[in-house]
Length: 399
Image 1: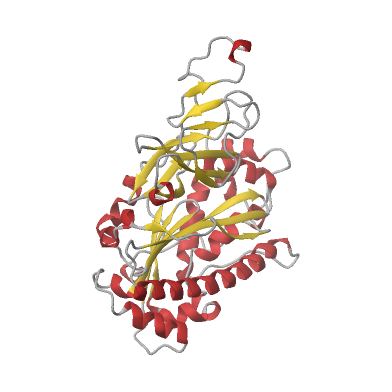
Image 2: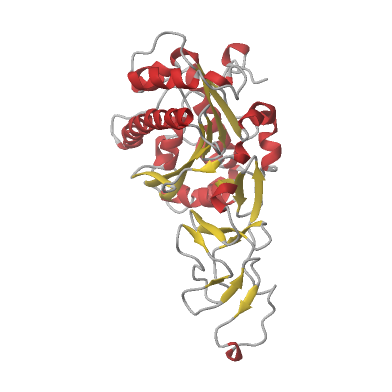
C-alpha cells in the first residue's frame, strides 16, 4: 500500500530550493544529460498493440539515439539501433509502418531480415564476405511490462523495469493493460521551446491544480495525492470529488464512469498516475490508459510524446467517457504548456533569485534529488566555467 504525505513520507528537512536556474539553459549540461540520464535509463517506447502484426514497426528517437522496434515473423518483439551497418543511415525513417519481409536501407539498399540479421548487401561482390550476424542490426535492450515496451540504449544503474514497478503490480492488475489497443493518432502531443526539465517540474506536483486546472479541480480537487520518487518511480492518485461537478464535461464523465464495474475501489472513481524516472508517466483511467514523456531535442526544445489506449470491445458508454477524459486531459495539457513556458523563461530574468517549494511540491524535490545523484554538479548554485562542466561533475562524483 502506498503512503500519502500525511503518513510521514516527507522527511523533516529537505532542499526546498530546487535546481539552480542555470540548469535549464546550459548546453554542456544538456550534453551530459544525454549520457547519464537518457542513454542509461529506461524509455517507454510504445505498447504491444502498436506492433499488432509481424513486420509492424515504430521508430523512437531520444537525444542522439534512434531505435527501431518491430515484431518479427515469429511474433517476437525486438529492438535495434536504427543504424545501417554500412554507413550509419537510418534503416527506417517513418514513425511507424508495416514491412512484411525485410528492411531495406534507403541509402545503398542493404537489406535486413526482421530478426535483425543481414540478408544482403547491395553489390556484395564489392565487399569482403559479411557474416549475417556480425553485420546485422545492433540490438537495443528491451523489456515489456504489462504490455508497455521499454528500451534502454546503454546499461545503467536502474534495475529491470519489472523491479522498478513491482510495488504497483497488484494495483494495476485490474486494468488489464496488456489487453488494450491503440487509439489512432500521432505519437507527438506537443512541442515547445523549453527545457525538458521545466515540463517535468510542472507535471511533478499537484499544488497548482486548484488554481491552474479548473477541470481537474472539478474532477478531484483536494482529493489529489502526489508521492515522491522511490527507486525511480512515483505515484499520484486523484480520487473523484464527492461534491457536485460544476463543469458539464466533468459531470457527464463522472456519471458515465459510475456505470463501470471492472475496477475495484478506489480505482473505479479515480485517475492513477505512475511516473518513471527520468521522463515518463503512465495514466490509468477507468475508461482508458495513456502515457506521455518529454523528449529533449535541444537545451530549449522539447517534444511531448505519448499515446492513448482503449479497452478491446469498447462499449458506447466507455467510448463516450474516453472522449470526455481526453477533453479534460487536452485542456489540462494546454494549461500546463503555458505554465511550462512561463517557469522556463524565469531563470533568464535579472529578477530571478531561486524558488521555494511547498510540502505539496515534494515530488519536484525528489525528482531533483534523483538528478543531483546522477549529476552532483547540479548542487552548485553557479554554473561551472565554460568547457569544464563534465570534468567538474566527474570530480564531484569522485571519478
